[in-house]
Every structure is written in structure tokens, then in C-alpha cells.
Length: 89
Image (tube, helix red, strand yellow):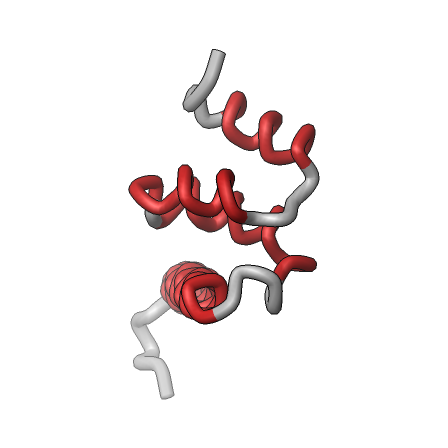
């Protein structure tokens, strides 16, 4: 349990950091899974390709072009994502 001198605010901020780190790790694992699925079979995860583009922009821009060329995704949504990250004009 927490010590008597440790305030509620400190305990709360520590737990928020842990949750944020867990969210980040979970998102990265989702990306790794979708990437592996895409490499194995480019059509199996096609329903997630738009989400995968979002994750690829965040974690692995080097593989973004392959996903854009071979993926099945909402073209306008992908363009919006790329524009928001200033990857295209």
C-alpha cells in the first residue's frame, strides 16, 4: 500500500502514466500483429488496413508505402491521415 506521506494526487498521476504506457504498448502490439498478418497475406486483415495505416504512420513510416501500394483501405481517409502528419501536400 502507499505510504502515509504519499498524496492521492501523486498516486493518481503514477497510475495514469502506467495506463498511458500500457495503452502505447497495446497499440504497438496491434501494429506488429497487423504488420505480420499483412506480410503473410495482404488480404486477410483488409478490414483493418485503414487503422493499420494510422499505426504505420505512428510506428513504422518506412513500411507505409508498401501498405499504401498493396493494401485495401479507404483512400480518402488514408490521404487525410497522411496530410495530418504532413507526409503529403
